[in-house]
Image (cartoon, rainbow, N blue to C red; front, side, top):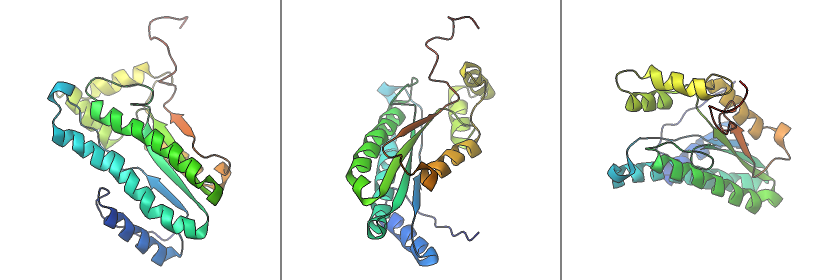
Length: 211
């Protein structure tokens, strides 16, 4: 398998256009785009600075917007393509304290997914989004450290305890969903929101019931 890499800033459209250009030069076409860049910095809302807010907007919203703009253009020429947007259960379905900027920007991606899906459906470009709960990633480990600097494993263990499957997702499991949404096996899916959270958004409470 041939792989190329490009280091750029997703908040800059020209960087994404350069990455797309290099991809097409190397492989001749662009079939799938995965918009997965994201940040999350925790802070009480009343203390959240404009800088923190704008960092979330620049990466989580503008980054996805720019990736879609850069990739849809060659897909229109091909009259085929699939875009996978990494949203979250946070913002659209649930939220925790201190996540106002993250929740706002991730919820926006659900609206973008639906708008692009309906706009390009008749030109054979599909747009779907994943809505991840918690996976054991560097970003989640950083959030755990911000939540409990002395014992960062405690919030991770608490998250796992509240998930019906009793664990966080493995990054590979999320990647497998991305691969499915970009593949021909999902050819009749567009505008979909696929929750991948081990069932964490299912329980109404953690104290009622028979278990």
